[in-house]
Length: 276
Image (cartoon, rainbow, N blue to C red; front, side, top):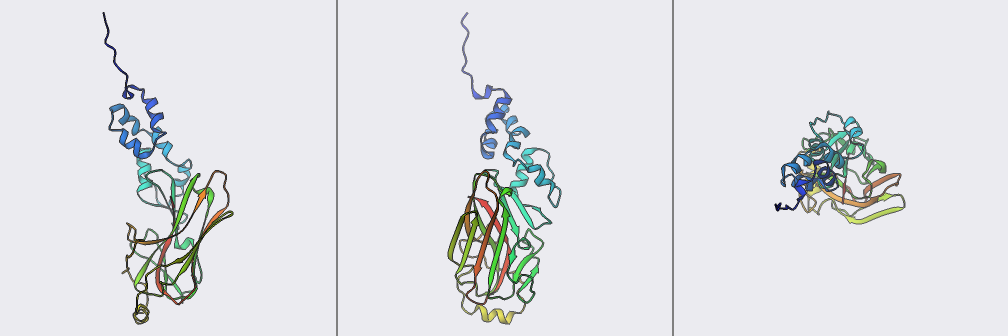
């Protein structure tokens, strides 16, 4: 009797082997592989696979969340953390995962930043904007010396990762003086990345005169303009990039400075760090 030989396929692998294979891929590949077969579908949804995509300290992270992070599976937890920021550190710090890689993204809220004259109500106000993920944002009344700085410990970041830092902001309808050439600095260890001629807003004639007649600058209307527009309705400018490697220690410092003219109408939400 001649027995017909069949060629084994990857779908015939034990689920444990499939799980090990998928855990070495990416979140996107794991989701797509679930369409191959029932065995792959089961493995692609398993906690064993999705726990590999979560940060090693994910339990500590969700334990510090301001609001409970609810989930029924590790896959659901991954999507919860990659869909939107969760708030930590008295709601002054936001964290989410990059959906493609699982690497950490952070948003330092305005209250977590060092802003020159930020505690002087003659120059800055602290108020709420409904579209912000934070309870308070910094609202610039008027100032000459604009200096905004943020710091984060490198140990909080994903290792072997190049990050780019962005200032996230809006401008009021009657903003003025924000078209001056500013400077950004990102420093980490011996690395210092400096950019010149960075502008928050294109020149707008007569904006200052209108602002002086407008009174308080806490207004919801903003101008979403230019290539810096984000999907969440805010604007951003790149501050610079840096690389975080295994064993790197210390703080990353990110700065935006503009000292050339009087200005007002800036709304600062924070500084975001995203994997490149």
